[in-house]
Length: 202
Image 1 (cartoon, rainbow, N blue to C red):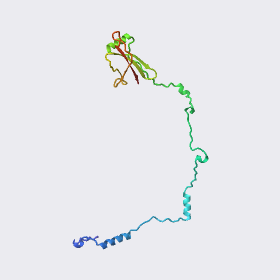
Image 2 (cartoon, rainbow, N blue to C red):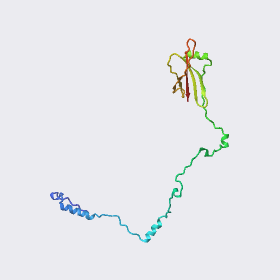
Image 3 (cartoon, rainbow, N blue to C red):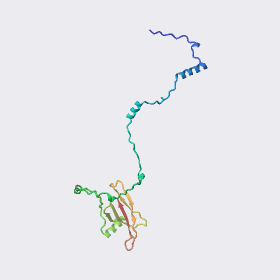
Image 4 (cartoon, rainbow, N blue to C red):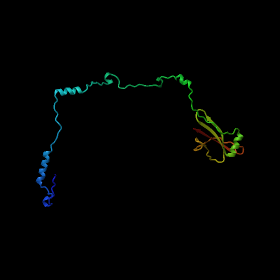
């Protein structure tokens, strides 16, 4: 059975006391005595047996010698020019010639009619103050050029061509240019009509 001692009476003699100066030095000497400095082990020579084992483990390397071209009288820089004509022209195979490759071609066609006679044109201009007189669709590119006849109701006029590529969800207004010396009309009003030109490239 383990015996437990009862705590004694707590008095002044049982309390901690401040150590004296001599006790502090003695404790430091005890710590220094128990603490030892450690260093890396000193290298020692290996016997011949261990050196032979190390040489057997190290793979043999081949000595390589590097020399440059100028040491043999050659140039250090070599320039070669390539021309597109040097490339061999590959002949298309017969299989590709037999197959018809579809090519997407886009072209513009008018969905409206323009006046066919001068009288019909001038009548439309008098009624609506503007009319498309001529339109041309240029081959090879998606482009159209047109001439617009306008009624000369004022000296300064701005004529716009409105175009859309998404069924009029959005649109663009393109300013037409005045065609110099294009005024004509009747005898009493010779400058009644003017022309403006515009080009649309899609």
